[in-house]
Image 1 (cartoon, one colour):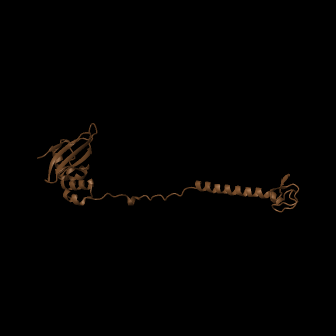
Image 2 (image 1 turned 45 degrees about the vertical axis):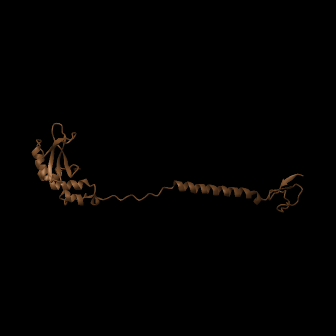
Image 3 (image 1 turned 120 degrees about the vertical axis):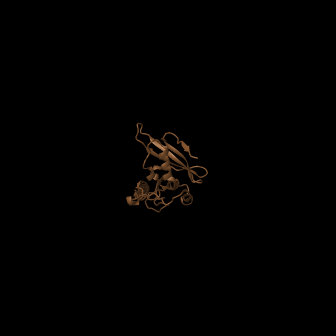
Length: 203
């Protein structure tokens, strides 16, 4: 028996049937109704539009400019860093209790305050370099290098100075102090910065 699709529900039925046994449409072999013919394409079109709309939202959300974190506020000139003032620490013994742990600069200032003037005097006497005649008035500027802390209370004040000579060398020098025995034990006269300091020992 030959079959033919119904004009409304599109299900197969006999070509001789006057009524569709599935949807009840009369004259099921006539041309389909305008609405029925458009029903499937409209559903497909709506689904396609929904899909591409969803894809567009995802793409736009990925390409939207990211929100930037607020920029850090830079300190103004009036808020610039001011180094601590350690000038009130006058002795190495005081520095041992009042200087922050590991703070070499605080201890250097204390040793300069206690021994700087005497070290600069001895250095000027021991050196033939014509070195800083005004040193005794500015020991903190003269001993501007690192403080080296040795064993058994011995410390070494150091400094550098650029001297205008034929080679334009920088010079280093030092003063060794025994803080336990309260005396200067050595002077390192100015020597070129590329060489090690050599201390003349005082007994």
